[in-house]
Image (cartoon, rainbow, N blue to C red; front, side, top):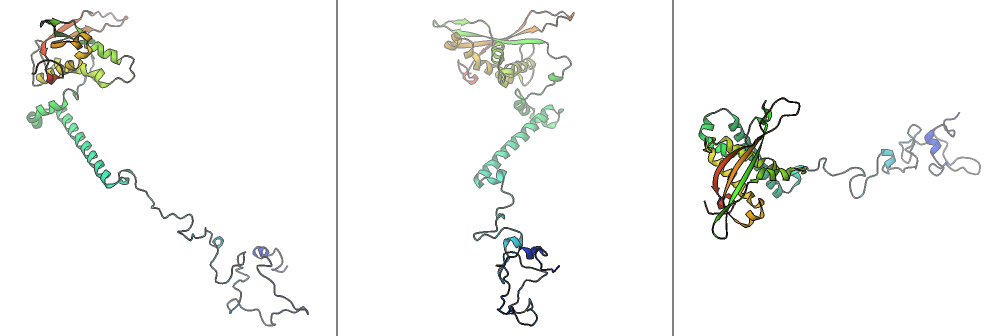
Amino acid sequence: MDRYDEGAHPRRAAATPDDHPLPSADASGGSDASDGPPPSADAPGGSEASDDHPLPSGGASEGAPPSADALGGPPPSADGPPVGVSDAPDHAPAGITALSLRYQIAAALALAVVAVGALVHLGMVFLHVAPSNTLTKQHGRAVDDWIYPEFEQNWKLFAPNPLQQNIDVQVRVDLRTGEGGVRTTGWYDLSALDGADIRHNPLPSHTQQNELRRAWDFYASSHDNANRPSGLRGELSESYLRRIVARRVDRLSAEVREGTVERVQLRSSTTNVQPPSWSAEKVSDDPVYRVLPWWTLSRNDVGTGADA
């Protein structure tokens, strides 16, 4: 079979008469071409197509740029880079680098303040729990003022014998009457008020759960049974507890809220937690009271009354 027969070459088979017109014949059936050999592909005016490298379908003319199909990619765009090629940077700025210079400076300053505060707090906690050393001997008061009472460290959570008592902190108030006299109210249970705020509250605040309890523990651990301060923290613990009470007197009753508070007095009521029914242990259920002296509230205590 001749190699130029139809179907013998796939690229030849795809060609159309319009793409490669055959030379015209004269009336005698002769050819317009000369009797000499066919022109070479390298000769002027010769065809660039050869049997080994046929022209692509579509008949590209001599000197024309190759088509996009021949290059295997999309055609170039007249207004920019080729289609599918992006001139955007490989990695867009993210995080703090995406902000303007002014906001970058503000964010950096905020992060620096937070970092310094965290380092100072960690250093104070370390000095508080570390054994006695030169720094704690010279700056122990500053460390205690930073730690107590909000950041006190203790091991009660891991104690082999946890607390088995209920402690209620109660207060009563001396009110000035309209005739100039003083009348003493009954005892109000501050712990019960905190318990009412916590009950049925799925997300109680840290203040409602621990402020009053930790303040009382702080006072009891820094005073003896005669309510005398037993260390440098005694005055601090008393001031802390007095301020908590001063901010809560308005919640006691309408009588206290509308009257003039002269003095307040605190006491604790300690009751043993009863053992389970299957236990043979017997404990007393009678409350034990610890009564503190009367305190006069001042404006420094965020209460009402005379200046300190």
